[in-house]
Length: 228
Ligand SMILES: Cc1cc2nc3c(=O)[nH]c(=O)nc-3n(C[C@H](O)[C@H](O)[C@H](O)COP(=O)(O)OP(=O)(O)OC[C@H]3O[C@@H](n4cnc5c(N)ncnc54)[C@H](O)[C@@H]3O)c2cc1C
Image (tube, rainbow, N blue to C red):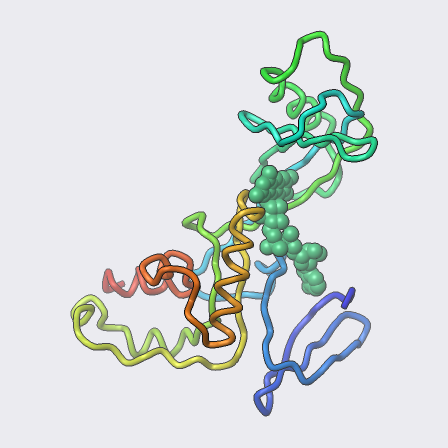
């Protein structure tokens, strides 16, 4: 909607969304949190530790005609119009939105192995972004869960993990799709298909044996299994 989301209310099986500047939109059956690194400011579960990692790409005047991206220590994208993108830096300790000269320098040093050392490179810009990470580096995709219910019903998981369990109840149609880290261009496709299937109650697209690895409640379940 081109608005900044702030909060939601779930009433009568529908979401009402509140955006910045007092904009309100209502009557949505499903809500998916997909705010990348900023999701960290909206999701607060005890065991789900989210982090953001700054990255900077450098925009260069076209210097290498490649039909596909080249990737090693760094990457070089194919030319687009009058621009060629290389990247990317990785910095957990800096949250600045401003571009840094040393990051551009580092990006250029990191592509040295791909190019002739006499290639003339001209920087025409750079862009900073933030990657969203979970604590086990896998994406977080699936239904939001009721932490209180899990802690109560599964508190003896250490002793009962091979016995039949009470099924987790789904509190509302709130879904998650974030923590794609540095791999979002591939994992987002998988996540989108899985979420569509989940929402429409269709075969899940993803093999069941992999679902635990992306399930939003996995961090809590791991702890409960250890009896902590
Ligand atoms: C420098 C850099 C280089 C990268 N290189 C690669 C690469 O080579 N290959 C690869 O696979 N991945 C790469 N990634 C990672 C990739 O960009 C991410 O994994 C991917 O963009 C995640 O997609 P997303 O939709 O989850 O989040 P995002 O692309 O971050 O999109 C989230 C969107 O939500 C919006 N938003 C946030 N908060 C709100 C709010 N309150 N209200 C409304 N909208 C909101 C944001 O403005 C943004 O548009 C790179 C990341 C960075 C930073």
